[in-house]
Length: 256
Image (cartoon, rainbow, N blue to C red; front, side, top):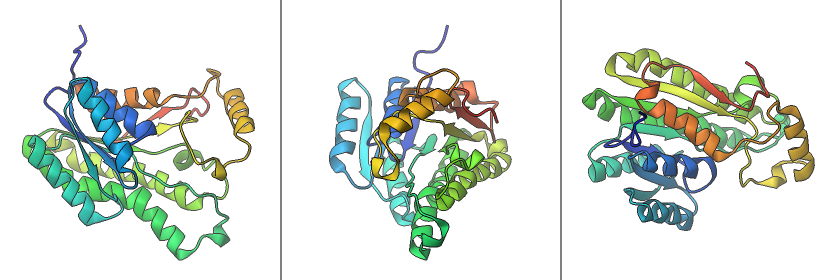
């Protein structure tokens, strides 16, 4: 029989978990028995709502406001997680910004801000949790990437594409180094997911939806739960023999 609480006794930090994919991951991990650190940078209200909903269902969670592009803030968040729950066993790096800008219009600040939020944040989180994971001889590091990092399928997103490819390269490097310590590092790459998004960065929303659905063999957009379930698979013992890999969750739209 499947274990109904495969993450019981574990503690997970999920960045960007006040909404959308991060929220779904945090809630599913809690249902699976994990203590959860819910993170956000701009909306305390959203973070508090997710924490409250987790607690209402009997889960253990705290909310930590931290800009994951700030190394000191990430360190403080991990310290608070370890102080509250004893350690950190699972780290999901889920934060990104995606601006559409022709390469000649990307300022140095635009580039650095995107690199810091989308790529450096994964390093900041890993460097803080790895010592805790090594101490316990067990850990799971999961990076949320995207089709951008593997197909470069959307023009005018040079900075985001670079970061999305980078987080998977980082996971591969971590997998080689940390495997002997019982720590895995993998990437989940969502396809077209039905989320709350900034539609100013897209063309007509209905045109976007119809075009995406037409291109997806299973003929639907993905859900945040599709991504959360992929992360749960990698976060438990079920994913213990998988490391340095990418799990594409895109309904067959891209067959890498």
